[in-house]
Length: 116
Image 1 (cartoon, one colour):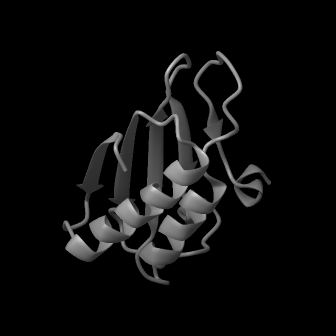
Image 2: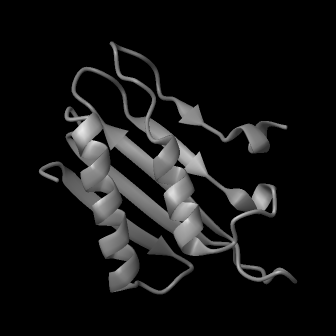
């Protein structure tokens, strides 16, 4: 990916394997959204321990020329699903940014299950 990439880990130790996985997902995404000029990915872990295990969230912030930043947040802790970090990453990138057609304000997408 030629765009500027920033990957940060909050409340979770840095992992080269996870960073590599995120970069692969960004490369795939760039094939469909070639106008991306920057991407920020924040991997976060819920600080309190759940009886079912750890919960992770992934926030994606994309910069595209001519529009405000586009934000995508995937937080399965709200639904109790996808407590595995790899599944959470896949789910966040599968949703990806909305189609970019012109100027728009910042958008935040939530999964259908989080809206319910």
